[in-house]
Image 1 (cartoon, rainbow, N blue to C red):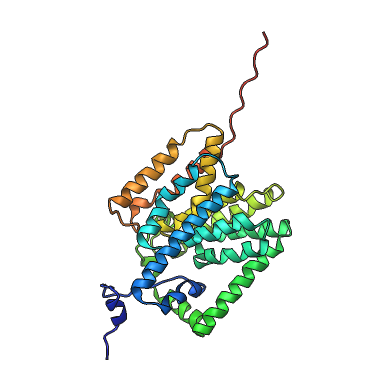
Image 2: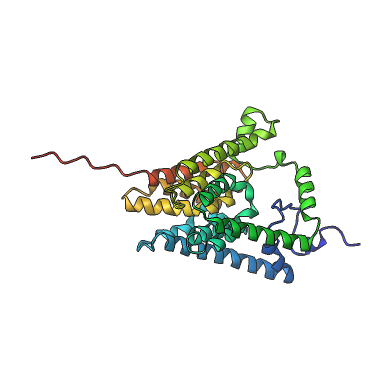
Length: 325
């Protein structure tokens, strides 16, 4: 009998303990094609797909913002979470692609826009407040085709998972019960909130997300008539990721649309871009210095992106009226 993990060892896996993928069984469509090729070829194809998702996303965001003549969209390739995804081969760039498709298509092709959010559903815990705002917006604007596209994509993905493994959801539920998430070495504001108050009360780790969800409901209801996804929607996205009970630095790649909108708004209002450079620069230096993304040294980044976007999108001060001569 071959030893366990022999195939993984042959592919270069050198750990004694298995790496557990905790994503729900909604993502087989992303990994199944790689099973048709060898490990080396699969790795190459995976990185090509990640790079293509990034290039396409940056292009979409540039177009969505009116194709300005400046080159600020190129900053997207230097956004620290994006770089971390490319360095580590993480799915954060597919989350970014799903968000970019939704922002670009929710008016012209709402069904496709909703279906594109399946890429974000791979990590649903990141988007709970965002999903609440989306539901309020869809009902208030009768954008039911967005919801229909999302549900259709979810059903198709679940059907695919069922065809591959009929017990996929039951096995995932059992795995989550046995995974000991409260002891996982992750570093989020929500976890440190729990550790600061009562380390044994695991439910406290979900309290920031609950508060953020209540805020998202209020915020979307009070602004539903003039809702703009590149303005109010990006604020909700930032808060949603920042208050997530479980996330990694690489997941913050999905915040690139909010960051780029902030860059464009700051450029239009002649605001300095220095605050963004002071946030992105140190994060890049940490990556290049080999600081693990699963460390408390990246704990500050989500508040930094939020602070940057609030600064960049703040209303410009009106010039005082000229005194009569």
